[in-house]
Length: 260
Ligand SMILES: Cc1cc2nc3c(=O)[nH]c(=O)nc-3n(C[C@H](O)[C@H](O)[C@H](O)COP(=O)(O)OP(=O)(O)OC[C@H]3O[C@@H](n4cnc5c(N)ncnc54)[C@H](O)[C@@H]3O)c2cc1C
Image 1 (cartoon, helix red, strand yellow):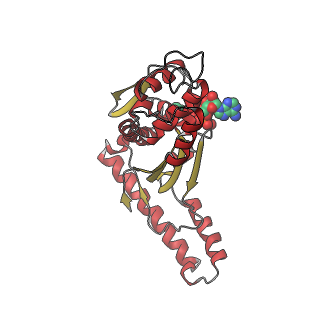
Image 2 (cartoon, rainbow, N blue to C red; image 1 turned 180 degrees about the vertical axis):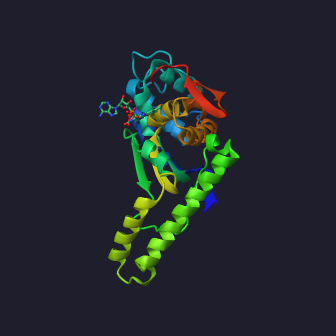
Image 3 (cartoon, rainbow, N blue to C red; image 1 turned 90 degrees about the vertical axis):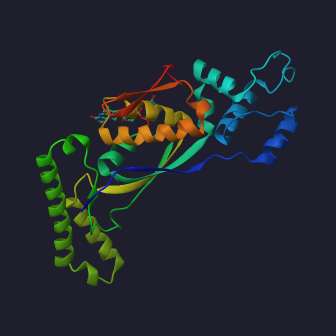
């Protein structure tokens, strides 16, 4: 048995296809348009927004005599007026490792604009258990002792079942899978596992706001506080309206704009 802490890995993000973009800008009559976006996610979001009014430069649309310059300025306005649909074009991909099934159960409730691939505990046998000990458990030495002992006992249960059903000697993978799935029923919901999670930037804003709030559960707050730190640094103009306050040792991320 081992105690672990949730880890957040950003493993992918939207990239602009330069040749396609250049061809489009030529097509729309703005071949020299460029922006100062710090990332492709922000650049693509700006492009999708500007195409709505042909606001790459004045005159492309006779109704447009002035345009907002700069990515920060442009996206700042998008956030202010709540045109969040343009943020849906950019997608980021995370892997959350050493998270519990408590965490993954909560995460998968967010369906809109998300995709997920979860470690299969039908296929991956739990011969060793690891778990995150929440801060309120860590507060008491006696409580920690009960927590650790229970995990050790449940780990022992996994080993005993493996022995009784001789899973090591089993040749048929289909039976191994059935047994592995049966054994997991007596594993704790706090068992550490992994999930791949992708989402568009609009959905990400929603989840960060909901899951860092003080009412949310500690582990998901911890993970999305970390997610926020990563995306704030990488896509600053998409999160420029946020403020982070510390609450109970965790970040609480709040936006100035009510709905984007
Ligand atoms: C503190 C906290 C406590 C919770 N407690 C419980 C609980 O006790 N029991 C429980 O079952 N769940 C609970 N939840 C989960 C919660 O009810 C939501 O299911 C979860 O947070 C997903 O959020 P969402 O509904 O905004 O979905 P998302 O998929 O993130 O959707 C984003 C937004 O899209 C829109 N949308 C999504 N789907 C639809 C739809 N089908 N129709 C119309 N509009 C849609 C909504 O505006 C929604 O807010 C809790 C969540 C939190 C943060």
